[in-house]
Length: 425
Image (cartoon, rainbow, N blue to C red; front, side, top):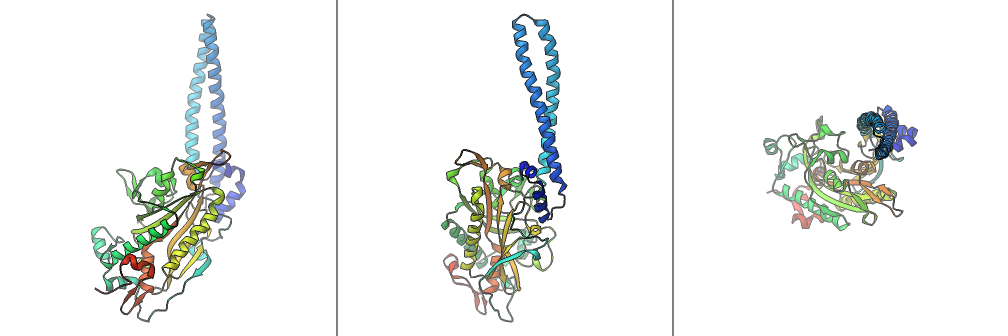
């Protein structure tokens, strides 16, 4: 959530940055400022009236002590009117504060100065490419056919159990999934991230704090009776560990990692992008999260990007890093780098990670603060990244490493998978 003082002090700059994000209702900035002006006026009237009540109540006490009961009773009537007025002002203040809050949360985070203009994914900026694209045989298969050939994932039974987009991994397919999860977690904890196993459902306050609500309500599975949401990523529960927490400065940076299943409705998805593991409603992901001092957050963002890049190099997957344009960024993001891997059989790039600096957008919603060396309370900055999302990593590993006799696996997975390749069984 943006801070009102930023909107007030940097109004023109805020509007320009919202335009880079292609946010259509920029007039909300002026509405927020006007509501804050009204809030301040009502607050002042409330405080002044309350002060009159307090001062006059003391005067009444003195008059009563002096035996001037009749004079005291007259003043009491006046105080009674003031009390009615202060109650009305209190109710008015609460209503304005709610309207201000409800309007403020409609504004997305402001993009960093380096974010390029653009509306769609094609406008994203390629920052770097790495690895070598494999050359496959003419009869190379896409991962959905390899999955059938090696009996790795059963989409039909998953659809019977739940519905389309809920894959059932089995045999070597389940083993590869587990191997990837374990490797990602070991890689992250070796880099100083503390591992967590979070709840896989969150309450409304948690979904609001990280920016999923109200922006992505339609994409989340909602258990209505308990008002819980199935998580779209471990970012949501893990970041919320520090909701309403004042962190000690010497505890920063806080580095956390977690595996979780992820649930997304993906409403409106269709076509070739949804074949096989390209787009599913339940998938697995390992996440990294950091909570840091504001002045260090962009250095930490670079560190997290390098962390994910090394992971992809270890998996021997060709990749590219994109700086997302304003129109392709998430509601809460200030700056996001996407990682895509090359799918040799599909001849296309597949997104496998987003690494994002939210600055104080999430921590303001969460009230996650720390006291700096001067004793001043400040909002921390939060960052997160996929390290990594499994479905498209899984797909690229199958496609890029297929041979006539099996699917070769990168060396880093051998100890986790218990073999160097997937073979027909």
